[in-house]
Amino acid sequence: MKTNKNNNWFLLESEADFEAASKRYEQLKDAEKGSEAHKEKMLLVHLIAQYEKKLWDLPEVDPVEMIKIRMEDFGYNAATLAKAYGDRGTISKVLNYKQSLSLTMIRKFSQLLKIPAECLIKEYPLKKAL
Image (cartoon, helix red, strand yellow):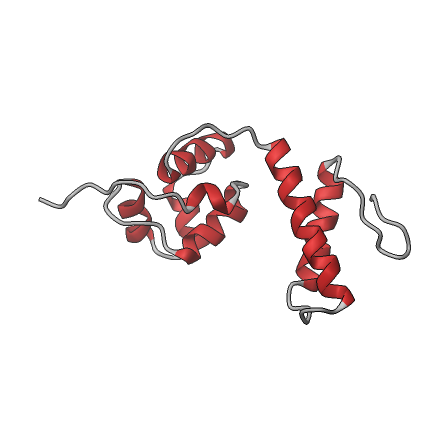
């Protein structure tokens, strides 16, 4: 862990550092703006984003294709996503470009598939219903 007893953070250099920073962020996510905890939270956001950017050399593809790539990487299928999200029919529509990703899906799939949320919010074309 790259902190000292005063919670001074340094660059995240390992998965353990990343996990510790993510865990600490979860503890601070509701910190009151302007407080020391809020300042620490904002620093963690920056450090986590930098680590993710360095770690994930993700291809330039639309969000649905990104999800499919990561599903394959992790050995997941549509049922796995449905367990995380709770609706198999909606997952099928999204994976077949018939429905857009919702904010809830973006949050859950970002965490489950280790994809930065900014990669999932990009616009992409849907297939028109016949």
